[in-house]
Image (cartoon, rainbow, N blue to C red):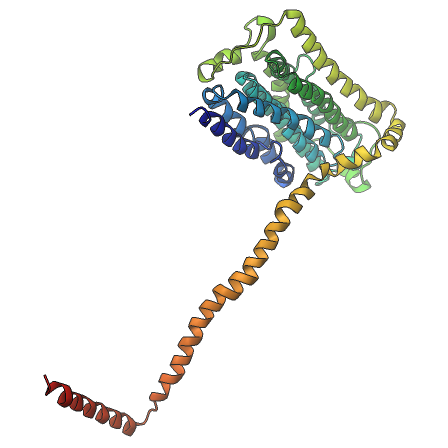
Length: 426
């Protein structure tokens, strides 16, 4: 039956969207940032939320039999990576910025597996583990130094007090932005290149645009947290300091990996070429490409993505470092857009209206109408009958010996009489 593979792939995709926080099932991940930051660094950067990507890659033999389903996968990834990136650019909570960043970056992985570049999707998953874990641990370092403070509006100037954290955060920011030479430059470019080559130009456009927003929001976070004038409370400013080596050494290790990690997948067959792709090849299905683009086309795609990312960095620098007065003018012209992004497109409210509130009303109905009236009424009714019968029967237990003797006599007379009437007839 030809409909079975597409149906199976789409049903599996629903699970992947929930597990890997893709549109429309992404709203849980930002709320999960309430957990400890080292936990966020582990499960939200590397091990848990990327399981949906891994599942699709491992089932690539099934997905290649359903091209329409793969098209849906790629489209969802493209929409998610841009959608989440737009929300990240206005967040004030440092960990919330990274949370929406995670949603966006997993979107790139979903694009990779959706366009048939399964090894590229896993490659970006690996690179994301390096730089996103580093970003989360840097956020935890800042949070620890500021006694739980995560609002970037109450930070600034931390570079002087926390130089190691600032430098490692900068390296992670360069990596996630896709600056040439850093981890995501290789993996993200491989994903976008595969989308373009396989004819998914719309998805390529979404991913390339999201690259600009990615660079903007991560450097917005860096500039507002570590540069400029201090906006710390006096009490916190007096105690801010760099973290001990037990916290900074992991940052430095991840910073090195965020720089050199991407070199396991080099373009244009340079040196060892795509070593990660060769390693994963036996475990993944292969998709025939629509064509073989020229080196010039691939260079143009690479330069386009890099240019968009550098523009995002420049725009963040211009707004938050060079000319912060420009920010007020930009806000005045984009108030409506800012309101939409700040309210996260009102998706949470939409979920509350369509799902949560009806569920609560249904729960109250079954509680008060079914459970309290019918179920409890049935149980209480049985109890009432037992109580009534007990009240009737206990009247026979008077405690009077003469009454008991009379009862025994009447019983004996009844037995004898019954035997005489019926037994004699037999």
